[in-house]
Length: 338
Image (cartoon, rainbow, N blue to C red):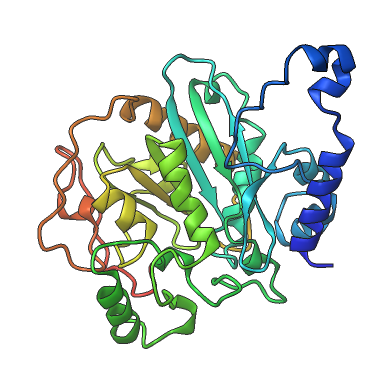
């Protein structure tokens, strides 16, 4: 049975098993006034039994047991992957008033196993006092098709690199030209034939519009650095990871959000895509991230920094103009990118 059929069956059974408000109150209450419709949530669908999916995910995710996955509180979004696997997410409300909204994404590339696994581990700490200062939307595995392939792969089931599928300016000409000339038409980095052609990239785009985050954290591997695009002060260090821009590429999420929309986005590049950092390092990265957001991201955004003029693919805005008084270690951007 496909994941699409399973999700549909579960949704129908959930609806059939849940009594309506009028049925609970009895026929007299129903006669008095019709029940009020529930608030519409365009992002969520019926709660999914995570057991079968977690049984497939856990062997691929280092340090994440089936029980960790099942007890994570994840919901199935209204969107699914190209092959019908539900995109899982979790919302965590803040205790603070007027909180910073954080969109935390993992697993945009399916062969970066640790990029999903570390987000699953961080989700355990969402209810700590430091984390409750923020409002969270967390999607630990944006590209389930890539992770669950016979051999985990960077692309989704359509063979498209989701991190080249976002609508940056001149997308059609720039992404195709970069793909052909810079990557040698590497199939692992195919951007697709049009922006937002994939359900997974469309879902991320929809979260930007609906959740309206003040900052986005996207986890990748295996460059072992921090990257940053957009206004605000770049983070200089999360754990052992140092700020060292890897570049901006046509169709990438960093380009689309940080350069075009002036929305701060941190790309965490773990040092290994298969092996997790030691537990103390996992915690240090998390704690340093919280401190940086508390000090630099605010509900009322500061005046956006101007994007660097004539920015060429492969050059970071943060690298083009380093923060005052801070030294930026420059490196030659990789043609592959994150």
